Image (cartoon, rainbow, N blue to C red; front, side, top):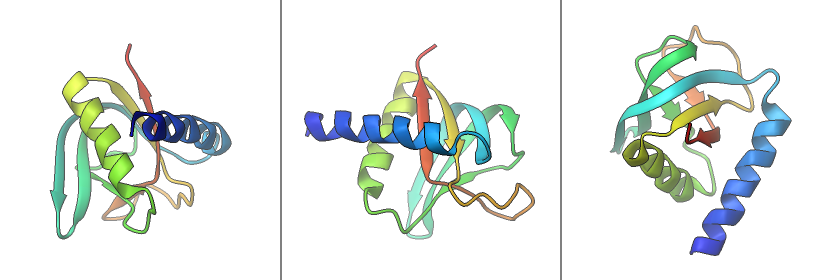
Length: 106
């Protein structure tokens, strides 16, 4: 499991570098995470980015459980996160989605 998690983190870093230029959603600390039948979403104490109440994890991800584990770790460890959307269409929607995640511990 740990090997898969490290591989996934490496994949996310590569994904982040690929999408970083034009897909930025928000940066800050996660202060709340909700997992419900209507979806998984987080509240981010935002430093900059889209001004939304919640940021929603896309539903059609094949590694969704790994994303949730990493988000949980970021929440419990008080890490900074940067969320991106690989098909970003703007901040003006009712729901702002993300599918790329970067975690920093500083």
